[in-house]
Length: 234
Image (cartoon, rainbow, N blue to C red; front, side, top):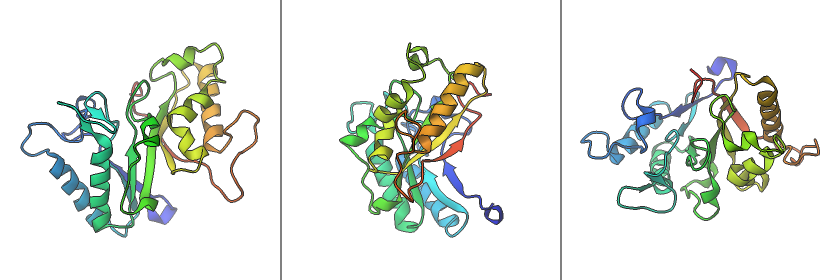
């Protein structure tokens, strides 16, 4: 990877093999092995093993799923993903201070992993703030026909949607945003092309519809990775 300039981000999708959609939490309740402590120890082991390589960070947990995963509160069966990410992130940085810590949002009223509205009042606080990256997923109508795809003003509604859920962090330079998964198979060629064009423009810094980048001189757009095998992409 390094020879061609590629970098690797490790992403934990499930505790058990190929079991991601059945696991809402980053540990398995009442399981003697897949505990929250084991979750942290696993990440520390990987951070030490791949220190100084092309692996640059940890996407701690893929698609935290409500109602068991929450942000800023707990309940009888609910766990605070923010606190878990903060604890795991700091544990990783204690053994590898070079890694980036990627924290996904919740799957509230939209794509799993895409809601970072809670960060406004309850941000993740790491021992090394510069290593924090928030990560989101954005998919086309191919994956699921979310309500915003049927809006009478589509695709003009997309920027405001993204801004309200996660884009405000990038627009206001509050924290780096990584679009960790996006893609389309152009099943609906017209609508999917509109969606992709809007998203790529937004990631490149066109935060308004005037066609002009809002990035400051020397500032780069959002980082991203393409994901073609996700919900509905199989």
